[in-house]
Image (cartoon, rainbow, N blue to C red; front, side):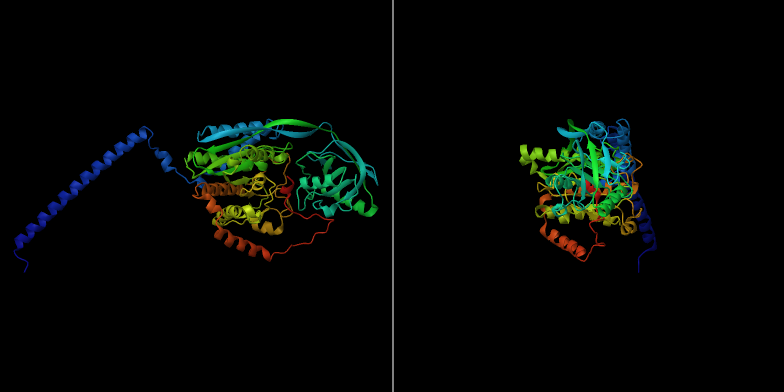
Length: 540
């Protein structure tokens, strides 16, 4: 059926020989190609056309943000404070802090770096203040133990009756306040200390006493602008004593003596912008670089500035090319009333409004490593109507990152009390991160985040102990990586304006947000005599 057996045997052997010949030829060709390839790529490697080390170690931007690098930046900022009277405030270690940031960014040769000088007014004390109770009993109190002065206070020697005005945040608190008397109030509430000072001026107060609503600290506060009266903050316990004396004796006479002088100080912002990207859709990610005079400011705000710097460094090292121009800003004089960011925006408003229109959004990082933290995201859902869609989109991006790593977050006030304020005042969408200042952590928050209920998020807020020992590593790296993720998403987004103002996206997410809060009710009803605990970052 199959023919001659010899013919069959011959054909099989012949086929095997041919297959072996073909296989051998293929092997020789492949070997030659591999050899030629290795020679070519070896030559390219030798002349640095291809960097195999870089390719093998290639990371995404978020993966490149490492805790060790962040901590190195904080260590350098701490060294600067150590060499400048334990502070990085203006006229102390601030200029050296700017020099450090500038040196790090210049070495990358990937940014156009602008130093923007300006002048600020600082009010400094010329003598130690005196604070006494005169009636119903004469008592002299100790500076930095019982009381401390508030920045931007005025000189004066005031001895008057003292009247309690609640939290001092609403004109109704002042309706029964007689002119030319001393006002005493809680440090927190529904407004910033600056707003309390404005109402005190409006109602002709001659003295200003702020009761620390945190029993564990005597914090420094800032009125953000010069006032006409002496102003001090006192401990919680002393405040309770005063309120009891007012209630029992119906009178309390205090004496406050202060001496101040106004000084002009030179300072500067640093802004580093990518050489690539659409300048008509510019993203500004900012952090304030100054501290208060009382301490090195490593959490407030070395943490935000270290993250901002490290994102800029890794962006450059990865040679990322943004679709939209990105600028990393390091603001001065935030602790004096947002003066650095306000100068930057105000200069554009006055002198170059067309450039202002090119700013698509602002991202802000202020205190992102608080030791007793919560994970706060600015609540863009409550932004003013013209920027609500864009600000909500930014909020969603931060929320999505933390959902992705299975970590809880809370929305925090979006009221312009940090350096994003001047941007939202000019209808520029904004967003950012925050891990807490002086607010007291609740038991519910302890369950969500760990830590200590009944203690501040940062017990070293605006104090000398805000050092490298005042950092929570876990939240620091999380917040820094969240920052990297969001800024990259926005910088790489084509048609950024449409993306920010997508009405369908905004409508669906905003409805979800409203549904999530409509059934929430206050946990407590606070009487005027006791403090309503809210975020003390309002008072910064």
